[in-house]
Length: 208
Ligand code: PRP
Ligand code: URA
Image (cartoon, rainbow, N blue to C red; front, side, top):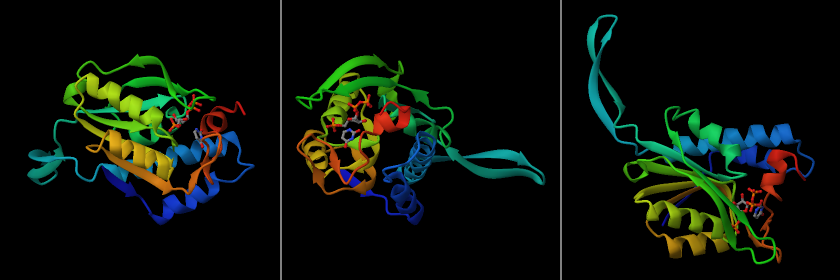
């Protein structure tokens, strides 16, 4: 698996703000979107370009444009929605494929409850967004599902990844790319990432 910990100063600064215990819902939302946007910039450096031409002020000029534009953004409900708009800032025409999965609090196993995918998903690059990669169960289940539908090109963007989740994801799906704003220390006994962010979904939706 290709793992990229994006260490841009803007990301490191914003991650520091995001970790504050007394952060407001408004500020958490803004930062999750902004960091999602910065991760997208990094994760799209290899999008293929094609040559074309347009009419410029001085006549016909050659330009480059992104080939095909076949992308689907895949937010994992709920918390993935907090990063989705950051991706769409750069890829405004992308289709959205929504996956609903929550993590059972006792077993920590992923429980799927909803899916609505772009119909031609097998032709698209899927960019999955979810702030937290903890045990990796939710991400692995999402990728299993996308691959069952024929999706072949998958990148995942997360704000925080635990070493345990990275190892599990790499073992299950060595062909994907993972972009993270931080690799943290470990999981605690309840499966929360340390130092992490706490419950990202609750912070984004104001339900804590
Ligand atoms: C969180 C997070 C991930 C998952 C990560 O979602 O957004 O989807 O946990 O944990 P894992 O790597 O151990 O599977 P949660 O289940 O809290 O749901 P929510 O987004 O609806 O709050
Ligand atoms: N889900 C979260 O929201 N936070 C964690 O630390 C782990 C899973």
